[in-house]
Amino acid sequence: MSKDILSLMGKNVCMKRHSALSSKTKTPASILGKAGATLVEELKGWDISLDCISDMPPKIQNDQESFKVAGFDLDGTLILTKSGSTFPKHERDWKWFDTNTIRKLQELASQDYLIVVFSNQGGFPVKSTSKRFLQFVTKWNEIRRQLEELDSNFQDRIFMIAAPKVNLEEPPKYRKPEIGMWNYFLERVQVPCSSPKDAKNIDLSSSFFVGDAAGRKTDFSDSDKAFAQTIGIQFQTPETFFRK
Image (cartoon, rainbow, N blue to C red; front, side, top):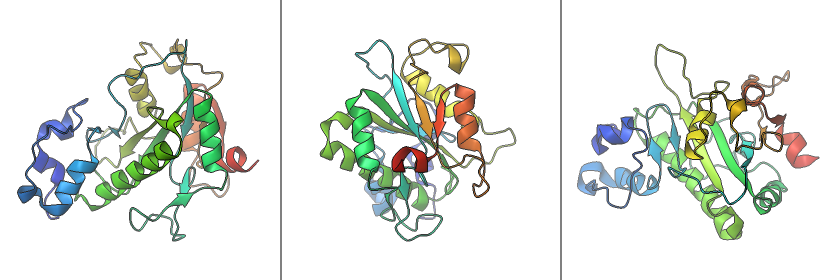
């Protein structure tokens, strides 16, 4: 589509935090076209802003004394491309990182972990044309649906927080290694704190983050490792976590 779909939806959707699209949102398909109507459907329950998008609800309930967080990067960590390409060619171009991936995630869900994906997404800016944005949202919705249909323990326990590409003069606070996505998560679990390590109802000693940007010779950066270190949680590579 030649126009920015999110702009057609209205500035409040794109700019205002905690304004996820709901079933009550009225966006005529005749205005947006087929792709736009699909995007509206896929974005139900998502919180959209220019620099951070998430499918987390405004408040996360917890029956335990504290939250245990199993954090993951997405591309190159939870999933790989089927095509072997560095970047996915379409929303179905993905496969699990390892044959053990689902089993390991099931173990975490059964142990009352919140599974949260913290993902830098450079393939699309939210203000750009909608094709890659739609592909990303559709892909994640399908991943989450597959897991929830496989095991009810995944219900309300697995979430995505993503930082799209942002063209701003100031440094992007949500993109790893910055911890804006973690702070966004803390807002959703109602944690008032002056710094990540002061989050009283987060069990930092049991929490961890898994990512492929670990600063190894073949890695493109160490942003995942630095993200975990700043938060104060354990860090592992996907090879270590899923294959050993």
